[in-house]
Structures are given as C-alpha cells and as structure tokens.
Length: 253
Image (cartoon, rainbow, N blue to C red):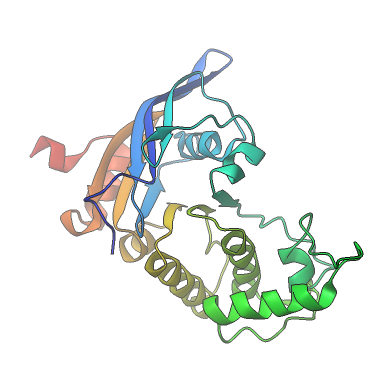
C-alpha cells in the first residue's frame, strides 16, 4: 500500500525543458511514494516520456528541481540515475536476444571470481534466487531470451532492475503487445514490487490497465500537467476527458 505519510521517494518540482523553442515539458510537478504506482497518461507528444527521461538521466532539464528522499538530486546521465537507485525498463527492453537470462541480468556488470574470470555459476545462482522471488514459474534460465515469451522477457528486465537495488522503477508500456496471460504476469510482478516498497512510474496508453494497476494517475497534455488523481476518485471517462480535452473534471467540480 502506498505510504503518503512520509517523504516522497521522488519529487519533480516545476520541471521544464524545450527543444527548438517548443516546450516539451512546461512547469510540471509530480511525486511518487514508496510502494506506490503512479500512472502517466497522455497522447503522443504530451510530454510524459520526456518528463520521465529527465528523471532517467536521458535528458537534462532546463529548469526545476528533482528531489530523491527529500534531498536535491543531480541527475545528468543514466549513470547518475542509477546511483540514485533509479532504473528504467523501456518498451524495447534492451535485452541481448542471443544471451540467456543470467547473461542479460548481469550484462555490463558481470560477477567475477577471485581470479577475475566471469563467474557463470554464481550469476546463474543469483538469477534463480531473484526469479524465485519475482516470478516463481520462470524456468527457462539457460535458454536465449529470444526464445522467451513477452511476459518472460519482461520478467528478466524487471529482475535486472531489482537485483541492482532499484527503489524507483520507470516502466514504459510494459504490457504493450502482450496477450492476456502475459499481461497478468506483468501485473503480478508490479504488485510484488509494490509489496517490496518500490515506487513505480508507469507509462501506458491503456486507461483500463492504469485503473487496475495504479494508485494514482497523472495526465499530461501539450507539455503541461492536467491533473493527478487517485484512481478510486475518478472514472475511466474522467481520465479520457483529461487526456482528450485537457480538463480535470474533479478540479471543475
């Protein structure tokens, strides 16, 4: 359950960025608490992906402030973001198709023996441990990830983030192009991560999915924040109205 009594994991305060004179993000503020999923919605070009890429270190903001655990965070690159335990799972997943789950989990961060050799056995053992925690039904440890289903591939990408101590997880369209069973698998993973106290920013176009998975939804349009609402306080039609019309029905009430 989201904890709204303490300090937010993340605060994005008055964030702005422009490209060629066009404000992609225009004075947007947003926060995220431990054990909470905040959904970010909006049409293509609304600014949601740009805002999240600022947190992920892919873009540098022109103005505004990022706070992590209530303290200013200097995030200028993806490496900086990782130092603040922020991990991003993009829609493309960035997995090496020809490698198995352990090799993908530790890609670029391989475990080594005391002699400096890659420790395949330990990496496999660690992969089995994290998978047992996240997705107990995952059995295909030693096959190339190209042979895995969409949901299983998501499991590998999520396990990689969690193993390296992510506290803030950014998920970009995690169930896009997945079937019903695979989508449920990813939904179960998200619930497990929530229970472990991670904070998750979830980007999706699927309003129904957002209502099921998120604690709050934030809608952007033309680079600005239309509003942030708890899912129990709004209907799917309310969210669609925010996306299409750029108006918050609750704010007008």
